[in-house]
Length: 218
Image (cartoon, rainbow, N blue to C red):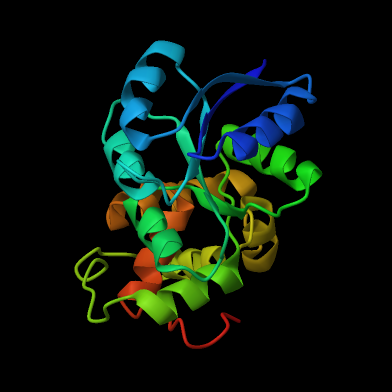
C-alpha cells in the first residue's frame, strides 16, 4: 500500500528536494505541497495524507500551530517536523503539540525515506538523547501530567524503557515478556498519560520528573 505524504515548507527549493527524494521510492507518493500552515487543514481534508512533513518555522501559521490543530481532528495524519537546528525550542513545542518526531533538514535522503515509512507504520521516530536534551533545556518544570495517572509498577518500567527509545520487541527482551504483552502495557501507558503516541508519553515522563531528563536513562 502506498503512503501518501503532504509537504509543508515555505521554501520551494526544500519542497522540491523532498518531493524528488520521496517520489523516488515506489511506496511513497507526494500528494501535495503547502507553503503556509494555514493551507494544511484544507489540504489534509481533501488529500487524506498518511504523513505530513511540516516545517516548524513559517510565516503566517507556523508548524507548531498547524500540528496542534491537526492532531485535534478525527483520524489525523502523523506529523514529522522539519528543522534546521535539532536543539530548538520550536522542536520541543512541536513535540508537545503532537508531532510524532522530527528530522533535520540536512538528514540524508535514505534516512528521510526510512523515517516516513516508520511513522506511517504507526511507530514513533524517537531520538532519546535529543528528546532528553530538549526537555531538560525547555521544560518549565513542576509538571504534574503523570500525577494521579495510576501507572502500575510494570507500566512504569515500560515507560522508562520507552524513554530509552526501545521498540516493543526490545522491551520484551529486557523484561522477558511477550511482544503482545508489551503492546498491552504500552497502550496502558498511553491511555493513562493521555498521550497520543510514545513521543508524548516520553515527554510527559521527563516533564513530570518521572524520568530525570538531566541524566541518561539506564
